[in-house]
Length: 356
Image: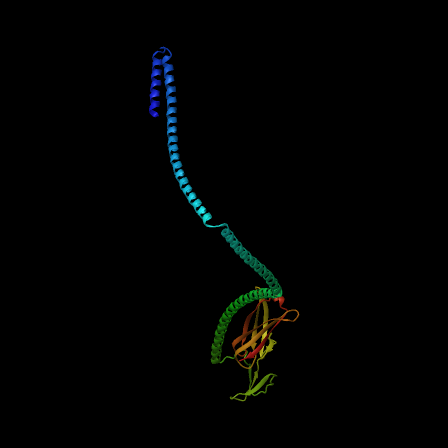
């Protein structure tokens, strides 16, 4: 096809050239060139169309191949259908109408049995559904008495949680009080050490004064009068001196009573003074002084702090102890009253419990 079109294009080109030779010299050449350009464009379009026709022809050939394959498939299917038809014809020939009816009757009976079984199964399922509904209703009725118990358990759980929270707060307050008490104990130890040092210094000074023969103020007043009787004032005693016949009047030093020193008796020979309450966060801090007015030193003395509200109801109680409490000694104490501020406390008391 392409060769034919090439021949045609050559002939057309030859004719155009002939026309160009016979054209006028003035405008013939331009006209011939324009016709040649138009012919080239047309020839290019023809060549593209030829290429498109060639591709379409190739696709047509491929489609023809697919059609052949389809014909082969159809032929194989036709052979299978013929085989099936021949088998059916053989069955029709070998089986009579009575046999077919018998087979259908048997199949129908089988279907009836299956239907009956399905009906029985459906009835059982319905009965089971009724039983399940009854059981569910009974379960709900049985759950109703448990609702108050569940609510009580929830309330108890909430109460326990709240109590635990309060206990945690009290533990924190006790820990803070313990730290404060330890700090106070350290301060008291330091004070005691300072007092011991002061006592040691006083003893040294007394020994020096005794060696020097100088009377010590605050112990006794000695008045010596030669052979003249002296009226002894109340609270004095007369003693004989080894040398001479002088009479010595010794005036006893006045010993103040605990009440004069501002103390109040709390039992078992112990007295209390300078007790004060101080705020300590959400709690209170009680401080004071205790003096041992008993007849002996104590290795361990137990005390108790009790606080009351305006209705005289006991709010809080706590024990504390003081070790190595010597006779005549004044010791400070510092305790924490957990959970109650000074505003909530109407009165308090500190009492001695027992001794060891």
